[in-house]
Image 1: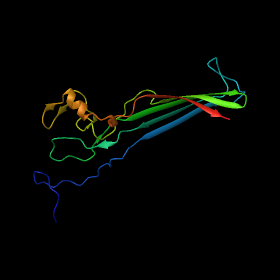
Image 2 (image 1 turned 30 degrees about the horizontal axis):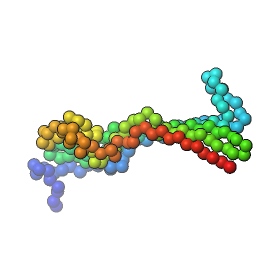
Image 3 (image 1 turned 120 degrees about the horizontal axis):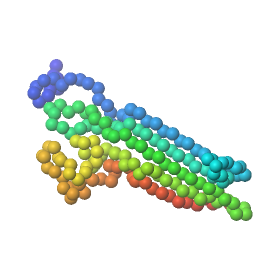
Image 4 (image 1 turned 180 degrees about the horizontal axis):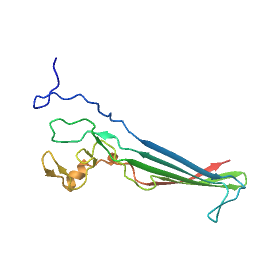
Length: 173
């Protein structure tokens, strides 16, 4: 029987490895609050108008695994974990009437706190577990990445999109 062997000729122990999609913990919370037409509501002494609604969607995910770069003889696949991910989306809506026309103004904030979640892929530095930054060192060659190198290595898909604000108008006849 033939075994896989390390560079030194020793057998490589059989062990379980996490899969690329293995995310150990995830929490999602969806909170909605609305005031129907003709109702009056006070919050901390402030009168909230009728036909007003707001919703928040919060999500947290523990980091997914990645295979670190290294100089070890045997590199264990998916033995390190990316940073945790956070996100909060907020939507505010206020309805109005004008004759038989009902309309609503909508304001939506995506990634409200502008948190940069790390995604694996091109531009992901497997030495640090973060996106490439100016001054990072390529440990294989001891080369310090210059600003131009980082522009080439950085991929916008390595971080989640920044804060987005969307304004809208909804018409109902």
